Length: 287
Image (tube, rainbow, N blue to C red; front, side):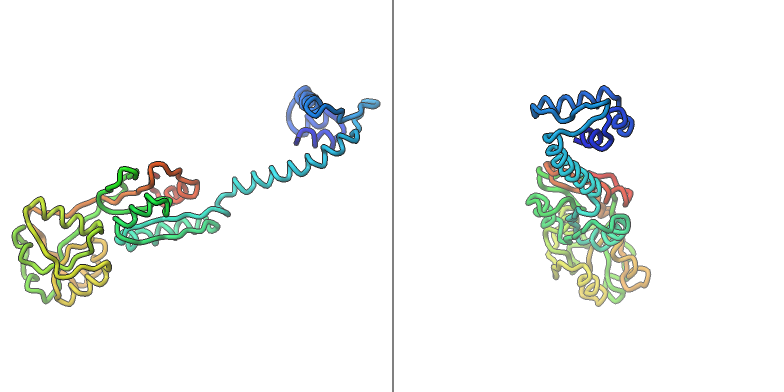
């Protein structure tokens, strides 16, 4: 239709070919194909000039509409960053430490993309991925669903901490068996931190019944600082308190709480251009 419209505009096959940057035979063939398809004559050829027939005039009206709609579709699809939205999930640790910076960087590059973030424990985030409530997510710890594709992107360390007035504050190192005697304040079951803590102690034959369980890392930090007990928390979330001596770190002989952060998505879900751009802007490889 663009070729037909250009021929109508130029009243010449040769000039239309020059304007479109294609050969004259290609333009002539296109016009002939249209005439054959609609079984009408679109042009009268008089004195080496082209004049639209009545049928040609009718087709030109539709050609203009088709070209306008095509150009609009091209513009809208290619300018996806003005239209698209992104649903991102995050576990609590990543949501606290990393996600705000990731979102800020992406939004600065693509202000037209609406991005929503859901922060929850890793178990709940996995469920939302499976139910197609999120486009992708970042979690810590083991991925449990076979329907999820996962890729490591960062290593993380958890540390044992207590308050400065705690009875354990004077300890320079603990034996693994000491952990069974300590009052622990822990994240809820389903969180990546809790899963790592439980599985690590299980491999050492140690059982702990927590004094507190909370979905809020901030609440646990505050309680530990006040002397209510000890906890194992991500180093990145307690660095400030450790520097200020509001919390103290106690090494454990033979035990190290380490894990990876993962980027996850449903294995059958296509990663959109907005999703790919999110990872690119933040120097991450998409899953």
